[in-house]
Image (cartoon, rainbow, N blue to C red; front, side, top):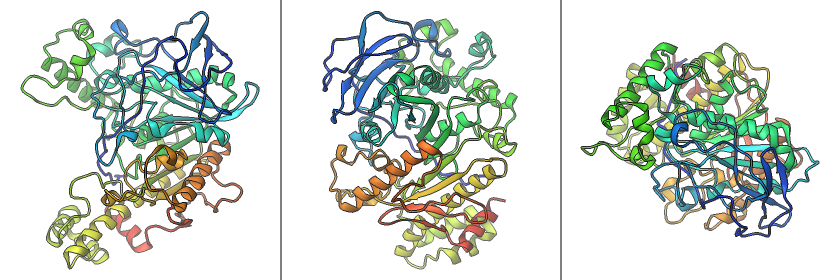
Amino acid sequence: MRRLIAALIVLAACVSLSLRAAPNVGPGVQTRPVEVATGQLAGVAGRDAAVRVFKGIPFATPPIGPRRWRAPEAPTSWSGVRAADRFAPACMQNVAGARLPWTEEFMHQGPVDEDCLYLNVWTAANRGARRPVFVYIYGGGFNEGSGSVGIYDGEALAKKGLVVVTFNYRVGVLGFLAHADLAAESPHAASGNYGLLDQVAALRWIQSNIGAFGGDPANVTIAGQSAGAMSVYLLTASPRTRGLFHRAIVQSGPGGLASFGAGSTRTLAQARSVAAQAGAAWAKARGATSLAALRARPARDLLAAVAGGAPAPRFGPVIDGWLLTEDVDSVYANGRQQDVPLLTGMNADEGSAFPGYGTATAASFRDQARARFGERSTQFLSLYPAASETDAARAQVRSARDSALVALQLLAAQRSATAKTPAYLYYFERAIPWPEHPQYGAFHTGEVPYVFANLALLKRPWTAVDRRVADVASSYWVQFATAGDPNGPHLPRWPAFTTSSPSVMALGDTQQARTLPDDRVRRFFENATN
């Protein structure tokens, strides 16, 4: 099955502060220590004193020096009580600060460091409790991001009954370089995917330690948006992650928006070869003749553009033969995925950050239709007439939404052929109120402040409708993380997806299950993919 794919949007991360084992200088009052496998930790009280926050907990040994481009190793122990009151630096990346429509609240603002494998916990539970665990994986195109982004603050969800965890994973070349020499030194003959291996290491740490924070290691939900959503999907397809999680939430990921990075029709040998060739070309452009030479370079130098001004290539997941052994489509088609309940969806204006969104002319829209659909373009233009410039701009937006919705449903249908657990689909159409930039609509990442119930952390002219959407959406996420089903008391009924009833939960001015798009449109795009 060929997928309808829109381009992967690069975004990222957060409000981050430096961390080491330092005295308590956090914003809250220091809490009573908890004990994890490597020592004692003292967190701080949240804005609500009922919530305790533990920041900058090491879940792996720093991946520096000879550990650069190697799988993460277990963290070392410490003596005494370690202050867990400040976020760790983000993993190495070029910090943009802001990139509309992503204002500072959506982007990383603090320091970066190669020593970055730390996680954060928000909890309102006692040690003896067994609350559901919600693990959030950030987006950023696998080249940006961190677990301390402002809108990922877990306090509101902790107050609703979850133990919330965010963490850092390596990105860019330090997280995803594939190279023949790296494969040669690997016990699994694999290279690349170090960032995904960091994610697995964080999940293993959670299995061993989350009980100290009142979390249930037998009830872990992994969730993510954009590259984080792709990470979640890849983790469900990996043979190395069994037992590490029990539910999955995929926000603006495969199907609805973005390619997997590792999704490919290539064989394993071809995929390894292509990734290794790209890595070798990258190393050659930097004049490095050995891994030792590359590991000796300052991390910041590895992010810089090569001589001549050419930008550094973008890196992401690969089929490495160990963590990812085959194309994700094949995994799902053959029923080899982790069969866990799935909640997945998309936003109404995923593409609004791209130049030209909603600005097509009648002539350009017709030309694009002919180029994309060939002899089917007449049928397409009957569904999306573009007689005027205004019609064309609207048709461009509507057709992009509809094709992405159908792609999302096709992915859910493919899954349902082999999965025993349910899937729940959503369509988020509430635009953050933003008088200065209404053109962005319900943009990529725009749902995150709502599902985290973090409207108060973002300065916008919120209305009662926004607060209602945030309460309903975050309650759905909490219910799903608790029981694998988003339905709960006082919430509009959300039916599971079936091929005979492909409805989605529309989250907007009203919240209700709807059949989107209509049957004629669905049939057109389904046929267009065959």
